Image (cartoon, rainbow, N blue to C red; front, side, top):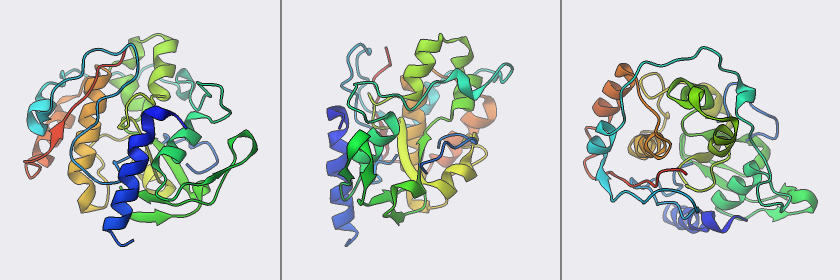
Length: 243
């Protein structure tokens, strides 16, 4: 397991106690994390090479820091973002690393990082999942949306780093395949998680990811973010710029 994500595991186990308590196939819509505790702040990454972590900002103030620009979809191909790599050579791909880190009940790891057992909490719809094959790994800001918002100008290496970002526990999240595929490549002006409890966490996660990677928002997206964030008065965003 990537040590940078151990904090997510502990938080998820605490959330499960408080409640009393990717699918295996590649998802073509967009691959589709709360923090399983549904908190409203992010945890700065400890990944080497990033910029200095930003102190916590109120959600609305953080949204206002996202630059506004027109989106550009021209030239987008999903293959422009190489993902689910084994970055540290431990036989666990990025997908598996997220599943291990976010498990409420840890799965058993077999040969070549095959995972069996375990349980997860999908915060988009408050669903408990006990079969990893029924989970997708969502890119918080979908690959196509990232392309539209600035990644079209990145190098292939930076797009790969984005698509496999284990340096921040907000970039990738294990959720039910149903909600991931419902989201597809839509931004918060077009789609929000069905669980009301997910709203503020999702807005924080989205905003932190956009700021971490220097991505822009179009006018409709920024307007929706600010309107949706109005009830989230206690939500705080922290992020560390990606290298």
